[in-house]
Amino acid sequence: MFRKFMKLIKTPVEFVRDSYFFKCGYMGLNFKCDNLFVVSNLGQLNQAHSLIKKERFKNNFLLILYTSKNKVMPEIVKKNVDSGLFSSFAVFRLPNKPSQINIKNAIYINNSYRNIINTLKIKNLFIQSFERHYALLASYAKSKNIKVNLIEEGTGTYRYSTIHEFNRIFKESLSWKERKQMYCIKHLCFFKNIRPMLSIYHDYNTIYAAFPHLVPDFFTFRKKEYFFLYDNIKIGEDIRDIKLKYNITSNDIIFLNQRYKFTSLQCYAKSLLLLLSEFSLKYKCNVFIKLHPKDSEEFKVTLRNYLKKYKIRSIILIDFYGFTIEPLLIMVKPRFVLGMTSSGLIYSSLLSKTIQSATIYPILREKIDKELVEDLDGIGLDVNNDIFSDSDKHFEILSKFPSTKIISLMDEI
Image (tube, rainbow, N blue to C red; front, side, top):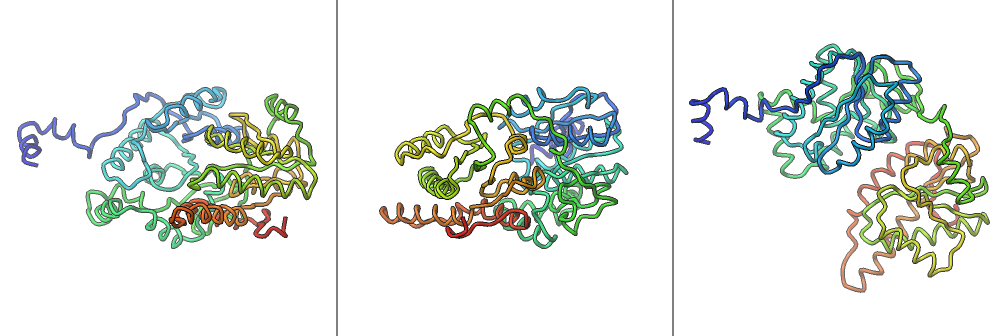
C-alpha cells in the first residue's frame, strides 16, 4: 500500500495509467456503424445473420467475445461471418470467467465496452443475453441514447418469471468471495458504474422472440416481434448426407443428448440406453442419439460398449461434428424428438406440426439416481444431489413450454 502511495506522489501519470480503474481493452477500432451485434458462439452468429436478413439491416458491425480458455470458438465464428451482412468485425478477449462477480474484471470489461460504444458511434445495439457483463454493455448504451434490442437465445430468455426469482437464483449462485465483492459494489460509490451487473437489463426497444407471448413481464419494451431462426432455412448438403448415411426416416425417433456432470458416465449411458430401448420396442423403430459437440470420446466409447454388451441394434449414434439438429428435423420430420432439457424440444413444434417432442428427464433422472445409489452403497458413500442442480434448473425452464410433453413414468412412454 505504501509503495502505491509513493507511486501516486512521485509519478501520478504512471499511477493512473497502471490503475485497474482505468484499464480497458483497446482494439484499435476506427470504424462507425449503425448497428452493433454482439456474439460469442456460432449459434448466436446464426441468429444475427438471420435477423439481419429478415429486417434488412444495413451498416452492421460484429463484435465477437471470447476468453483465453476457448480460443477455438472465435476462429470458428470468424470463418462463418457473412461479409455481405457485416461491414466489419472485431474480436474482444474478456477476462476468464467474465460472469463472476469480480470488481477488477468488471471495471476492465465496463471500460472496454464504453470504449467500443464511444468509438463505433452506433445507433442500435443487439444482444442475446441480459445478465452480468452484458448488463454493463446494455446499460451504458442506454445512457448514450442508443436503442438496445434483445434477440432470443434458446430457453435462457424465458428463464426468470419475475425479478424476485432472478434475485433469489442470483444470490444462491454466488460464492462467499463473490458476495463480499457484491457488497462493495452495492455500497461504495466509486463502484457505481458496475452496479448494473448485479441485476438484469430489462429496458428494450425491440425484443425478437420465437415465443413472444412467453416473454417475461418484467421486461419493458416498445415492441416485441416474432422471430425464429429456422423459418426460412435452406437444407444444406451436409444434412442430406447425414440423412442418407444413417437412413433416418419419419418413423424413427431422435434423442438430443446434452452434456451434464452426472458423476458417472457409466450410470448415465446405461440408464439412457435402457430407457431408449423401451421406446424402440414400443414403436418398432430406430432411435438415433444426436451427440452433443462437447461429448467426450470416453462417453462415446461407453455408449458403444453398452450397445455391444446388450446387443442393441435399434439405437444408433449420430457422430457427426458441427451441425445443428433443426435442419435435419425439418427434413426428416421424425415420429418423436426426445431429450432432457434441450431447447430443440421446444422449437420442434415450430419446425413442423407433425413432430411430437417430449422430455424424458424426470424418468431418466430417477434411473440415474437409482444406479448411483446402488453403486455408491457398495462402497459406503451417499449420492450428492448437487449433480442434478444444473439439469434441474434447465428442466424447470423447459416445463414452462406446454408444447413439450413431460414423461415421468414408464407407463407414459
